Length: 359
Length: 271
Ligand SMILES: Nc1ncnc2c1ncn2[C@@H]1O[C@H](COP(=O)(O)OP(=O)(O)O)[C@@H](O)[C@H]1O
Ligand SMILES: [Mg+2]
Image 1: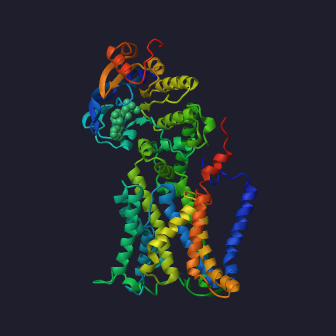
Image 2: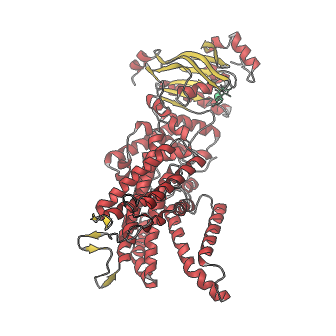
Image 3: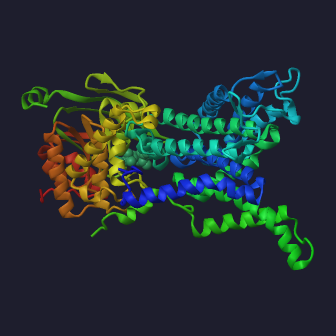
């Protein structure tokens, strides 16, 4: 069976490796904070992108569907949080109550998107999902009159941070002689959630449901002939993917304290899709690697391209922002040429190499 | 199933097709085709290329709706059912142009066949409660049994697309059997097989029948059809031109004419 536990050949080594990774992950924000607090924030955003990529991976990687408007669910989750925990309506509900609400609403939107696209494939599916993403964004932009729901393009400010009793994620605190800054607090929270999300994804993949999704991805007609209700399974994929996006959106709201429709544009959907494709569609760890790479590399370039040019040429020849996108595009093209299945192709292909060879 | 139960049910009608018609544009793929398949038999469906055999499978399994006519399976009408509902009712099929889940292992292909007979939902998948884990184990055990049954236990971890042609055909049968069908519809299972593989297939068909599954078999290999089928239905240009015991059908003038006019030659002397 494709159980990620069963794959362990050397349990002792595995545990030692895990312990090492755990220590590294716990120490990471302190190391990063020494370089600059900005890097902890960048890391937190990278983890949010991992959530998004993993959610989209259910739709694209597992079920083989397409969603070019995925960021809309992130937006839905973000706005649910912002509206229920900000001065906009004077509501200040606790985060643990809002996050599930955001997930639920995103889930409903997921089904709303999924239902009309059930019979579509390829280009048509791309156009409809793309349109859906844009519709949500345009609504967010315009739902400011006659009744001011979203505050339009100005967005919503002063969004509550996460708070558990007296413990606020927004303030800096001294704990055990260490300065615990807001981004570091969020980091640990996000890291814990990321672990849960990864486990949930792996379990979904290695289940009756996950196999049904993969069957649809491989051959829809055969899947139906095997008794799989493809309509329900596709809707389920959209719903699950969307709720991951909804939760991530709520966290984004709380961390940033400010959101506007600008954060939920088409380019973001494409970025998340690139993470899934680059990392290796259908491979949970590949998708995480893809999300981290595409989150970090542009930031690293942002901080290095400008100074590097000035050091070599004495002035900035190419705007770092432009250069960043240029390199990014080049990297994607090279990837698709040399590793079309992604950085970490689906686990199956690796297992295939271990399987007894044919006569 | 006990032998006495099986005997009592054997010979009763399992599938009754009544006046099935289907056309594609100007082509009448099926013209008022009627027949009855009895429980426990291997029922052959033959005819020259383009006769409408695969179309009959597609209409039977709900991929297309017939323009006229009805199917009754075990006394219940199949009208308007989707392919997944038909599978649920107990009709499983294979495809002439093999349709395996190419990037999944042989084992997973068969495990997917268990979908319709198992129940784990998203919550079971995520929380892995005791009953989900037990079901998961049962799915894998059954899938391995079936791979063994079709003689492919050595290929469990091989991706379907990397299997040899004959293995792919046998894997499709194992996957179809995983749905616990009462009627197994096979579309040219011997196509592309060598003589040894075809002989093994014949044994497999006979043991499937012994295990209580009725078989509807489309096949061009006349030697196989004549040796394994109890009765045979012959289609030509969407029409039923003959039906009956294999030995009688191969002497039928209309059948001989249809085959002489077509590309396939019926080797009557050899059987
Ligand atoms: N989906 C389809 N669209 C158009 N024509 C079809 C379709 N399926 C079958 N046909 C036509 O119906 C006729 C019967 O085809 P088919 O059932 O595949 O024959 P057989 O399986 O006996 O070789 C052929 O003329 C074929 O071209
Ligand atoms: Mg055919």
